[in-house]
Image 1: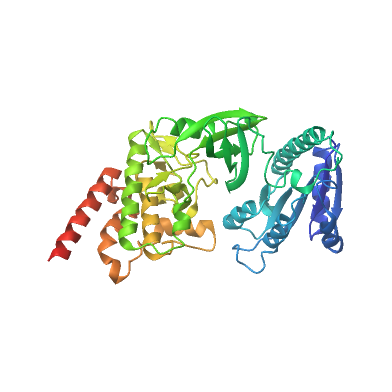
Image 2: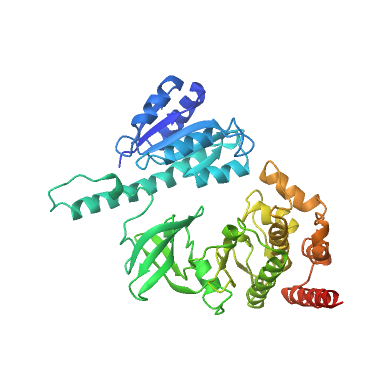
Length: 432
């Protein structure tokens, strides 16, 4: 393969720096640089047929909502064109939050310009080109499959314009996309073996880069309980891992938060999530990524935890992550996660407290203009006070969100006992 790379940067000198380094790293590549005047016109005609990979530098602003975040606006425009080539964003003035948003908008990678090195550039482009090679191979296979028809053209919707080939994973017919993370995409799929639809999670990376879903499968496979997502199948095919899981047509707690949740419902959800965490913790695991999108709702309004991709075994303690790498959502991280300390079950209980506050008030307890600011709030800001009408929930909330783990509930069992005691007091108060 002789990749075709296109580079854009407002600073022509930096664009030339990129071209020179890529020319050394990829001597077989055809590398072009476009200037400011040429960029808009070039973007109008760019497709997978004319360019294999676009590297563009732009300002991303301090927050995704910033009016100067032109990089995010460009990514939105690119995403609206199904055959637009894969894109790597090189960010000026960006933050962790704009990085997350850029990936959500379809960027293959997000590279802060001030931290970019030839080594980091090499890794990013090589991984991107591997994906391009797999896409080209699939297109050729599909073209060969349709060669006996009267129309040999590959239509836009036949290209991998978000959905993969319906038969990418043997035994499953892939349908609508349900969600996406940095490392995997979840699709609704029909299972031939089960005779019903499932949620099919497919890794984005190659197996040689690490078994991305094997760890999740190992974590969940033995947790047989209605409060935990059921796993049906795990395997690998065409260099992708896949995980077939229970499908939840009713959606997740994040969607439920868009509606009104009254205090009684919020407490009931907290109780159910705590019971689910007890199962996880009793099995010697931490979830580490508890947040509303990972709490699914069954038809009977009970909860089930999903996405154990960050789950880890508790034996011997658990270090959060290596320095400088965030794992999980900053809005729901415990102070010890933010500080990179060894974790225990109380970190999941803190995340539960964040969810509880959000259900009661419709707002997150700690916010900021960047992920770093949010994490600093978790570490330093006091527990927010609830409105007067909800003040009877303050003791439960305060212990869940205690900065010091020693002041937090020690286990999910203690949370469940506290909720039961709170209900009993409330019933006595109502009866009086």
